[in-house]
Image (cartoon, rainbow, N blue to C red; front, side, top):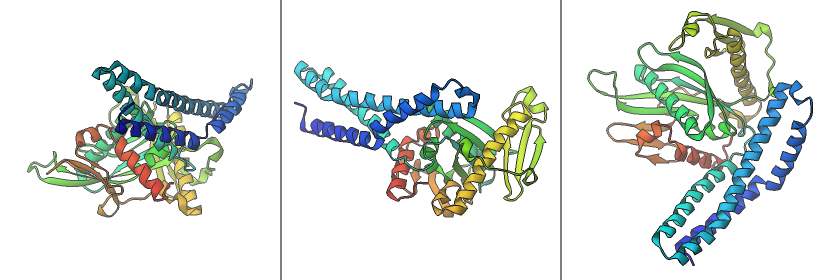
Length: 370
């Protein structure tokens, strides 16, 4: 028999796996897969490409979730047997292997638990993220670029596809702002807890006297619209400007007026896109971003629970959600959850899973799910 401590961990793991299965509602997932497979088998499915993509994407997502859960179920069922075989073998190497599998499965189950907390109306959507430099001058612009790298590295670690739509470069260093899409299931539910003001304290690399500098950057996260939710925008409400792309890029990008800026006149919302060579493609992408922002505005006005969709933070001390200190000590601390770590280098390299998961748990506990 495994030791008492190991047996307790095995029992706790089994309870969590059972609970996750209940929340995921596996029978309903199987029903939904059958429904979507029927839709996907319709001969003229691809006559409507947007609907076909929606159906196939949804089917792939649910099938993937079910496979992951079934794999966890199987591994959990095998664990007690693995420990019994290790004890029968009586060698430390076998016991170490069993403990390694227990620890690994506990981590996977923790991730699945977080997934079950993503039950908000928009949580399963892809995400549009905008990062803007706040107070702090050139350090703030550099900080905004550091955050952009942190989030794109996070996406890469998870195998999530992302696409940068627009980057506005600052004059000396860093960026004024950047907008990018995270094209993964539940990207919005996961990353929406990152919305708010992020504060950096460090010795400024731009100060010839090496003084300590505090700078701020704002992160906005909104869900991507589905086709049926498109917002009607009259032509008279829209101003379209074309211009030459700026910053790093190929010859064609920097020498043609392919970048597009859309201004929604009634609200003053401005979005830009310059990642494509084609002006038409950039305009289409900018419209996706603009419609998402307009929908966020509409739902804020209609329903108080949507206030978190677009938090107009001001980049100052009053509304910061996380602090990153690089001097005189090393610490990243979330001011909502009190989750903290001294491994600032790993965090800035995209290892923010513990911070994000703590934020999701905090949001659920405080009934603040967008």
